[in-house]
Image (cartoon, rainbow, N blue to C red; front, side, top):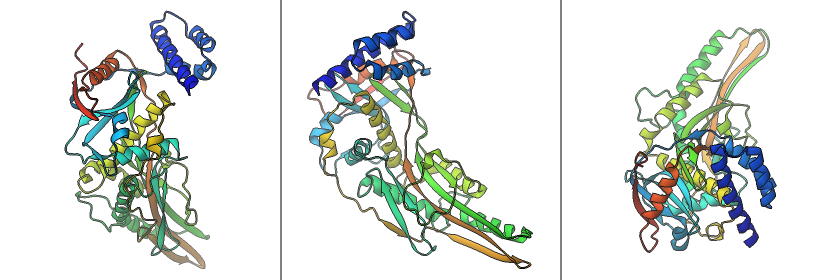
Length: 408
């Protein structure tokens, strides 16, 4: 462990040297890479990463913090208890406090948001370190519309507050698409009503002379992603719209309860009514946050993105207290009923039978893959210094700060 820490520290120092001199043009990038290879035992492994780092686009952070809040993960780790909550906040970044070997989560305090359970951080860290998949949920259709559907959780979301959030939203989303849940938005395009009308039109206009079968198989996914970010060696800030609903058309897989390829890299829907429903729901998501866990899932997505960055930049941190912690259990159902709709219209053209049908399913998948731009000035360094300088004596778990990026 000591040797690994020494290597990480040396690689970090050399990385800073590369950026400083490479950006200023005082030394050629190939020469810098050769120096890294020569002076660090892990240089050969790190050289491609550093080369890629220098080729990233450059951006500047300009978002102020008027009511900033910072959270120490060291203190959370020592003081955590079952059911503990953090204040409501809009998460905007993370930083490394290398002097104290601490991870710090920071953002803008938002009292309109429900408090963040500390267990959500535990679930995120376990997903990144112990699981082979990121957190999510998948509800697959049964063989018959009236049958039970299998609910599959992945990334350690089962029996956790995070899994409960996912199930609650996914259950509502399917009912809304089927017209069985009221959507408090005027003129909202309910999928099943439009799809049935289209199905009847397809049957009325069908003149195929040979055997014919038309199937619509659509899945709706709430996806966590869409973040953009800026970072330097010790600070990672991000912004952007984190949640969106995607529609995906594909084959009928009623017997397959495993997770498909990530729906957040969806091929899209060839059913215009499915796409219309997904786009409308994405536009109006935040209007539903008073009754659905929209803010909670969005905050979790940002926390997951920040923790992933921290693990990449501080890979030798001892996370055993988090990975072995007891979390508050939540009911996460393993089956659901009445969430799939199958519509079939069969008719004869001469002696040939034609079949037109549709089916719905879907889930929630969190995959906040952020490729941040490099910081183009010293703003992030000033932000980090401000947050750490305003940390009160006694090292509390949370503290307040303000920051104006336009002040020098």
